[in-house]
Image (cartoon, rainbow, N blue to C red; front, side):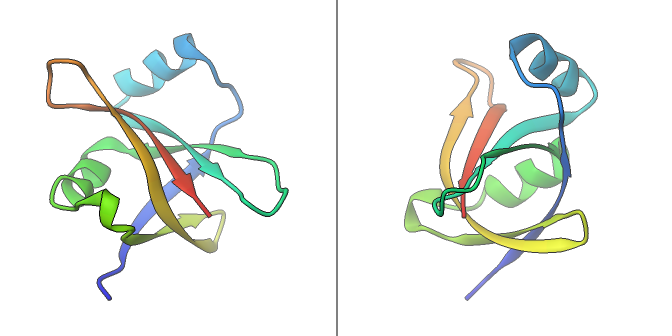
Length: 97
């Protein structure tokens, strides 16, 4: 199994305007969706690091990625990647845990 590591930071403010601000800082807004009745967690990732890992993956094959968040490692799968309509850029990612 070929697991990848991404470093994540929790974000407190959500919404379209905040997501734009995050992207201007070369960060990528994302969410961790917990299946076991835990609250979803909004996070942000380093854009370049994330893009370099994800560009070569076929996320529909349920590949697993480790997110390092607050000194915890969370094993996740990519649920959805939102891409810009005509630029080759990731706008948002949802992960499932």
